[in-house]
Length: 259
Ligand code: ATP
Ligand code: MG
Image (cartoon, rainbow, N blue to C red; front, side, top):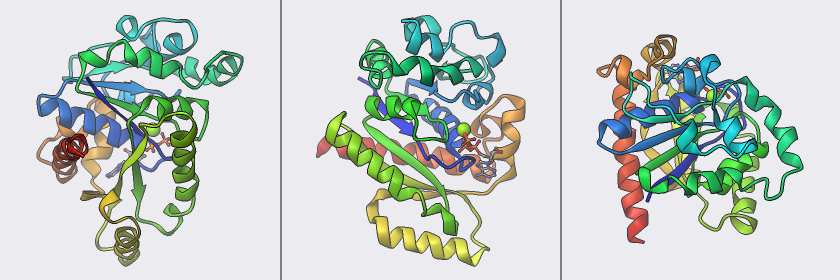
């Protein structure tokens, strides 16, 4: 049965999609069966996995709103070894349509339940908002991965996210926990980043992933080729860090299962 993780942070441009896409590539490279769900109308995880989002007829939108199944909508891109439930601009209208639906925050959870045995990992790339879409991801997931840059303002807003996770845990999904915070786009030459990283360590201890993702231009270039950095240039420092992150995730999941 798949373990389900969402990559969430309501701040924009903090590396959610880069993390989701590269973790999917890393885990599938480690022989894990992976489904990546794009839950952002921007469709960046879809494009970054080599899928033309405009050409997708059945997407996560139809799954949420029209009762389509994930089996109907998922795609197996040629360039990567994982499956993708794609998204495009259509998804932007979902918020409004969901509001009137019964159990509106559990629709994604119910859809994933039908395919949990097809995968070892289901990863959900969230949009930059604490919206009904993100709430659907939090209700479906066992754990939240929070990517963050080691900058002063990164800590602001983190408490909103952590509180939301706590509330969802208390009221909607007892399985949910923050599995870990991931430091991304890290530049050790910047003193402030080192300081914030140290603060995070003090504050969050073992909730912080050991691996640190460096700022690396190859990771930023990869999406324009429709590839995860891990596939585009496996030997780059950024790709190597995400490959290590995949190993750390597998270890963390095993440790949780033993508790
Ligand atoms: P949004 O909130 O809009 O969904 P996001 O949180 O998904 O954004 P990304 O799209 O993953 O963030 O990253 C934002 C930008 O930073 C992108 O241009 C991406 O290529 C770049 N980027 C992400 N991680 C790195 C990294 N480690 N090194 C260099 N560039 C990076
Ligand atoms: Mg994104």
